[in-house]
Length: 261
Image (cartoon, rainbow, N blue to C red; front, side):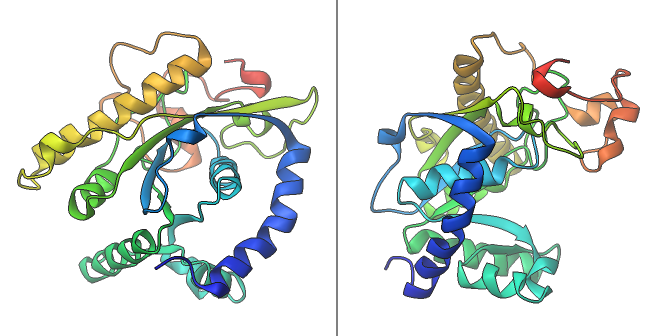
């Protein structure tokens, strides 16, 4: 089917100012673009370390000719102008009710059918891991993949957090930083395709996706990831909100500019 003319026009309009801004903010190193499936809708699963991640990943995908579609709070679609833009470029509203969840799934399926990229952060929010490795995830990406058969593409990126640290209030542009993006092979979920969509199946598929992202991130960072994935519930941390650090290991400031902990 492909993106509508209106959607592509709006993406092109947004790209005329988003791309120059991103190019001004930081240098780029992109690797693995050839691994992105073409002529089909894909589910893109990146790591999540800072609020500007969606722009970093969206910029990367748009430059590859893949229109990025994010899951966005349903309330944003009610905001004048912003809501109209979101609907035009077929972003996916997320609602908490069962009926709303079904509508979100249908919207995601439509975007996949149009050959776009649905970006889902398996962690659900910014990582709580003090060293910024992927933490324990949620099952939305795995569920959508198993229900639609769409390929899941893991992506790791590193460096944007130095420009805008997690939950920061300002940008740190100097010295100039570099955002690196690495694409992996589609995650093999074939063993889960015919299994019932139980919690056990979805958790196992989610772990498979997070393992792939973590492996890519380890390559980008040149470091070994932790042996055990960070689990906020076991650390008595909140999964949402800026004050989650108050309940963890005493690092109230989070990651510092320049990537220093």
